[in-house]
Image 1 (cartoon, rainbow, N blue to C red):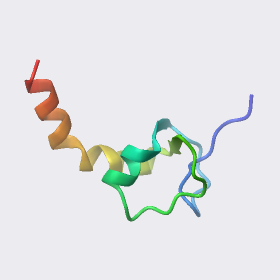
Image 2: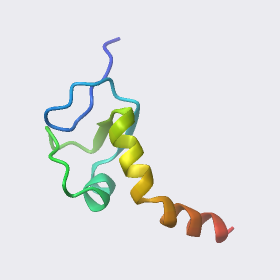
Image 3: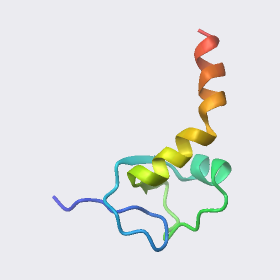
Image 4: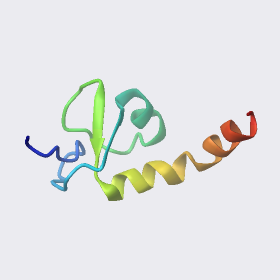
Length: 65
């Protein structure tokens, strides 16, 4: 089974997570994705950027429980 690589153009690292392309584009519009698919694979570094940008949103979601 081949390992997935990061979907960000110019990044060749191994993918750590797979997220919705729509959500990634909303949160990180500055990233240039290599392909237009339903799922976007992000390496550890790009996933950390995504988590930092969505931190407040995730905290508010948890408070709603």
